[in-house]
Length: 262
Image (cartoon, rainbow, N blue to C red; front, side):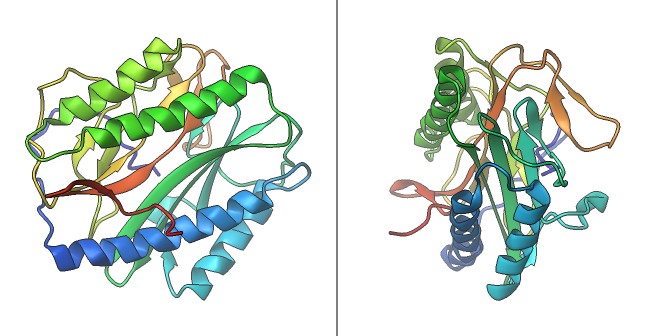
């Protein structure tokens, strides 16, 4: 969401969550996971992103939660739907999905005082080899970053892990938008770039809850915002993919809060 925010050099305040708070954040994130899983099953040729948004909002109400994005800084929808060269914050519309499209779904909820936030990118029908590889590498980069979310590491360890994996595959990481802390607010400190230097940045501590979200372009990392004030697209028109999980740093390492339980 919009709080995939721009990097700013300002003082930060990192919040350390108690175990009971983390469990409440998990509850919100599991709702997000369930709804994204349901939406993924509805992605097919001919469906409109507006229909997906309406279904998303219906499911959110059934869970007794509130869409985190709707009304946030004036955003009018529950879901962000970004197609092909759209990076993040794509707005649902009556545009119908076509064979070969890739669709990023970014979604969050507010439930019982806490937020959940996650994102996936899914193919529409048969997609190109490049599109499949882009999706695969972006999801892999997310997990590479998560592996580094351990107490005693630095924020730059997460960022560098994402960047290294993406660039080794010949793709680029978006630099204008980043991940973020999450909890009682949708976007909290620290900001989490998808590029950086190992051993640099904020010290990671047990109790931190982070939304890690690689945004990866097939071409240049440069992006621009369309006239609607929301939709971010690649400058060169290349494909873009986006994956996100909210995680907690625990004594046993990173705990993925937005992973659907089996």
